[in-house]
Amino acid sequence: MRNSLHIVAAHLTNDARVKSYVKMLRRLGWQTDVICYKESKLPLFEEGEGLRVYRVTSKYQGSSVLQYIKTYMHFYLAAKKLATHLHKKRSYNFVHVHNMPNFIIGIARSLSPKVPIILDMHDLMSVNFMTKFKSNCFAGQVIAYEEKWSISKATKLVCADRGQKQVLTRLHYNKDPIVIMNLADEDLFRWSDHSWIGGPFRFVYHGTIAWRLGVDRVIEALRNLPEHIVFRLIGDGDEKESIVNMIHAYSLNNRVEVLPIVPVEELPGLLSDCHAGVIPSRRTEATNSAMLPVKLLEYTSLGIPSVVSKLDNISLHFREDQAAFFQPESQTDLKRAMSEITISKTMRSRILRGIQDFNIANRWQHGAETYMRVVNEITS
Image 1 (cartoon, one colour):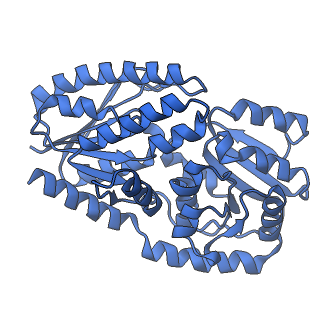
Image 2: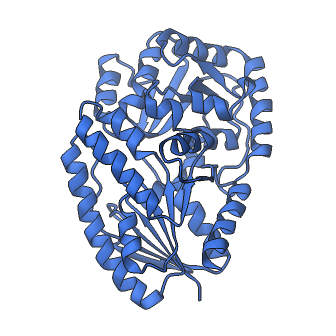
């Protein structure tokens, strides 16, 4: 029996990347355990065919560095105790550690020096930390060391896109990261018709709501766009309360629909009546060089054209004809791009042809094959 363990300090429900790995392993006959955060209304333990999910400790989301560290340490200690117990029963063939944080790789390394470990950089913690808490230079240096130490403990290092690979190679030149893109699960996110034939034109954004990701800029733009242009916001995060207050202050309640974050399996249904995505990220060190938004890849897979901030890492992956780009520093240019994509059927058709090319060249199956090559190599 082949056994694997995934350790992820996140909610499994909406982590599409982890779910895609687990789904593939189950199809190939692997028994997989996942240790993750608790979620409301979900049991601490779930078991299905080839999968066991253990939920330990609670997630924190906010602006306190100390609270993040405290939460991570609680998870580390609980996950380590559980993983040690499970490894004695299962004797894992490999452990897959998903950041953030990176140092939870210490849990895997403590099981046995012989157990191969994959460290999967969903996000670059050093870059993200400096963006979110840039005033704390000492803490930034500690996080940079934490990242370097964690990478040194990995058998294989995986990252989510070419921009991340470039940054990691520059920061940690002794490692060669393997790129497995955060591409949408093709069984869930299938191409369909999202054309607009009149009535409300609906933009959508789903995922984390944070200042660096610029959701407030969409609310600002709506104030100066025609009333038939509406917005569906699906997600949660530090800035959600602020966004809700903006919506009330600008009397946009009848044009902005705010929904809670949902399991990834429910997203296609919520996106079925949407006509365009909007990726309004501000230019920061993290968003510019080390983020390729998963939501953009999911909209692309569904056949939804998107208004997108023209950041370096996004431009590394998407051509000019595959999105309606706007300059990330310009609120005026965001409003222009949102207006143009609603008015111009020609623009929408051009983008749809472009993203069809993207989908042909970039399929999750390619990433799945890369992942299984890595697994086979470290477990042979």
